[in-house]
Structures are given as structure tokens and as C-alpha cells.
Image (cartoon, helix red, strand yellow):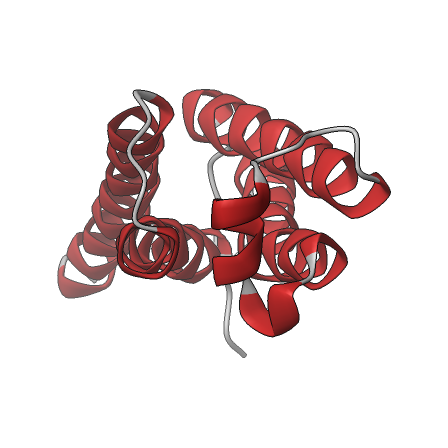
Length: 137
């Protein structure tokens, strides 16, 4: 019979991922309902020239994975490491694509890229700790 120890909760990782998720969801909603106007030049660079599509993409690519990483990390679920690594990589990738597609710069982009890198590295640390646990058995 296989016995496993309960996974450890990671409140710091849950907090960072949760903050990113809430902000991404707020940004997605603001884009989709037209509350956040990026200007006609930037809006024309969005996929299908649609702020609704851009908002939906932000929700699906950034907010949802970050929310999952926050939940899994906060509750100590077994897949927290993988979720954090995927969410962090998606956010860093999102920022890179954003710079290429909309061709504008904001102070928020490096801040969010840093947050994505922290979430990714947090997941990597969790994964490495679990590997060390298994190698000691």
C-alpha cells in the first residue's frame, strides 16, 4: 500500500498567484465591457480588433491558471507545483506576446513578468522539494 504525506500549504505562493489572478480578471472584465480604453491604435492591434476577445484571452490564459495555482498552493494539493509552473510560464509568455502584438510599454508589464517568474520559481521549488523527499525514501 502506498502512503503519502499530505502536501504542505504554500501561503506565499497562493497570495502572489491570487493577487495576479484577481488583477488579471479585473483587467479582463474591464477590457471586455469597455471600461478600459487602450485607444484606437492599440485596440486595432488586438486579435480580431476586439477588446472582448482580448479580455476573454486574458481571463483564460492568465487569470484562470493563476487562480488554479493559488487554490492548489493554498490548500496543499499534489499538483500545486505543476499548476504554479504552468501559470507562471503562461504569464511571462503573455507579457512577451503582449509586447509584440500591441507594441506599447507599461510599468505593469515588467511587474507582472516578475510576478510570473516568482510563481514559476515557486512551483519549481515545490517540485524539487518533492523530488528530494522521494530520494530520501
